[in-house]
Length: 118
Image 1 (cartoon, rainbow, N blue to C red):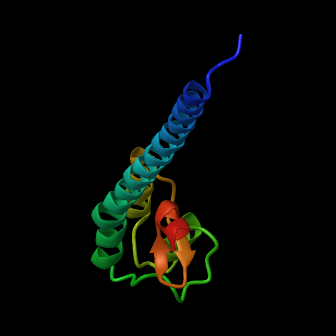
Image 2: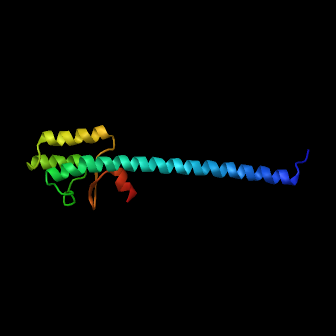
C-alpha cells in the first residue's frame, strides 16, 4: 500500500512538530529548575550568609586564605572574632537549607549554585 504524497507530508510535519514540542518542553523544564535552584541559593545567600558576615564584620572573606567556608569559620573562631557556638549555628543553618557551603570566589563567599552561574 502506497501512502499519498500529501498524507506523507502531513505525517512528517506532525512528527517534526512532536519532536520540536518535546525538545522545547525539556528545555523549559530545565530552565525552570535552574531558576528554582538559583532562587533557593539566593535565599540562603541573603537570609543566612550575608547577615552572618555582616553581624560579625567579617567582610566578604576575599582576603582570607581558607579553602572552605568551614575552614574560614575555624580561623575566625581561633582569632576570637566569633564563638564556636556561632560557627556551629551558621553551619547548622546552611545544612538545614540543603544548598551546601559557600565557596570562595573573587567576590567573596557565594553559594555554589550562584558561583556556577557567574
